[in-house]
Length: 528
Image (cartoon, rainbow, N blue to C red):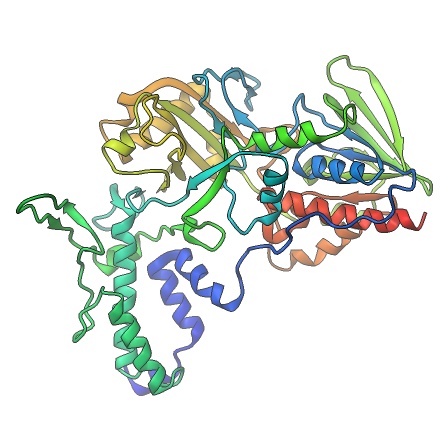
């Protein structure tokens, strides 16, 4: 490397190199130093000051945003009516458990036959510790939490579409992580010692950096070469007596570059230790539902028209059980209905609002669970919780509850995004099972099929009539249209996780979106 080349090394170049070797997790970790973390400081609902003023609020959608809005407004004296099209509350916190009925894209239905006590989270399944808003309701409503092990160093990555020796090979995450860190440490140490960072760091800083890199224990203190050791782990494990174990052999840097599969769960909002509601995330929704004043929630009410005047709002809806057409009115309306759905309802929203609602990109997401007879991932692979990542079935996640249990458990056998989810949607139930089994068998050969007990369930979110996507994401400059939605239109306001763009897809996004909306509504009510 010439002196001229040394001078053009930038922070962007450095981050690009880190990303190529360590994937997006490494970049996100580095960027967190530039204040890009996703935590929220909101810890409790906003203060509302009007006492309701005799005003009625109609809320559409009994997901988390709708129920939180209903709960907090009713506490302050507002009359609230909450309409939900489904026959249950909770939206994307729903679970499959014994008796749950799911309608697929082809119109067929499947009733979950998991054993009692077993379940699959269709949507929300993790709570980071910094999501204070979610934890607030768990704490105040008595929802029992347990640790969710989001990361297991013993889990696997498996790719079937790459060049090199790692193609079609299950690779331990600890081995990949150690090798990525080791190779990055080697490159960085050699760059620092060779003068490549002289324009970015002082001599004192370079010395401190080298001390730090050597202290990691992954590189030779003299040559800076990456040296695999007990930090990387063993191919045969040490034990008593003279069993010293056999250290594992590192992967070449070029092979790691080919296997560019990022450990996304190691970002700031996907730490190793997270939380989950004991018994399923729908327990949070059940607690919110039970906390609402009796009679304000009305299920099986499909909204068909939304209109407003200077004096209030009018909502037409159909009872999906009887087919009866009904109308209700209120002083204000809060819609938490997903944008892809609400924009297809007859409404008098402005063209700007419709345009803004059609801007976020809807996500195609599917989750599919398989019940296993035995917890082979623990006994055979030393995996406790955590996630294995594949190029064919997205994430395979292992249950954190009932560790060492004797009743097996439900594995999230396919967590699919984008095109993989689209393809999965078109499969029959038997085809979905076979798809999940065939890939799981690659990750756990000789164990996956052998331990499957024949019970499976799942949900494709873009096939859900009242969702049409898993969540929506604001990308690039599209975020400039968010203020249009936040402002609403006269008596109509919009809520949900989509107005919390940094928390989109999280329960905290829905909750804090509700807090933002009710605070704005309270201001408007004070002036009427």
